Length: 453
Image (tube, rainbow, N blue to C red; front, side, top):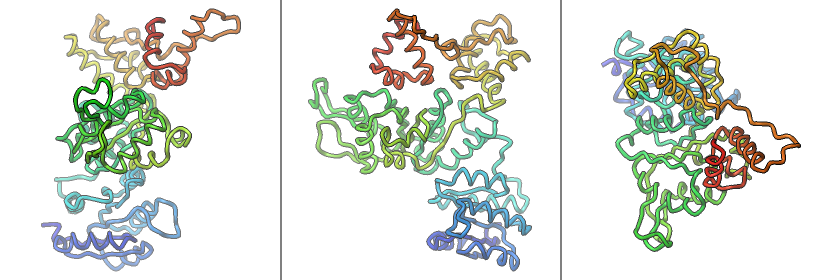
């Protein structure tokens, strides 16, 4: 009912956007005013009040700053307009759009949008403006509901949760960046669970662990007789993920040849099984993850730029645990309860000294390291209150590599020290460590077992 009485101002320099919104809203609201030039906003607001302003984030204007939307949002606030401002943004400006919400915008929508989502956002803005209690603008004091596994109250995690809630319902390809152990797979699962494909398959592939010979058959499948052990037709992971989501982990570790094969599939939206000629159409939502930085990934001798653009419609960078503040205690409490239930022990509390130890540790292994430390503490502790001495961190993460001196001549000791140093250099990533050492992952496993790693 409130929507029918609403007056809406739409400011966007794209005529197609103005036309699309006008056609959508013309039977839904009382009045629609469209404007291509944001410079006219002050004059328009002096003449008329609006319930909602839809404001583009980027204009082809002399400002040319990439965040014109923020500039005009501030101008609207300076003019004392009581309109609820909803930002219109492309995938690439989502971080700026989140900042705009912090600066007073009601919310933002991502182009191309679902009409129902746009109408819902406008209705929510009008209800809030009229004092209704049904809805509220995005709240940064509590994170959106992401699921029981993905926790965080820090500002950086709330930004990620909010970004997930916006991009998940779209089919945008996502690239998740972050150190080992930060929870990139949990982010990928959360995106899938909040997407329109949630009831379809979620298929994970550790592509960094696939050899050249296995890469194609695992991802694209094979026909019976295509090679010695191909005793029957087999669908690959892309076909298994049809209508759902495929999550390619360790994407930064695949070879240029593998990248070329993957790019062809993503461009054509079809796979050809090994040993077959007929293509099979696929409909998948792609999520990739890597612990390689974007700067490293952009090195064309290592990774194709055309593939980066294909997989990186939206980028989500997961922060290391050491930058998440009191999330450390939140996660420790969560893991304490999980493992107390698993091992039939009392749910632990953390003494002041234990909390201090947790907060001041640097967590080279991130959330994964914290999880294992709390599991061990729950198992080994004699009391329900955990003290600092009960919490031990893995020597795999903390022990400095033994220095190799010029006097060291024992070949086995040299090999052991070198493997330890390279493993630490790559944060425990076996694929990258094996590649740097010039051996296979299997050979690296054998040597790690030999030396007790």
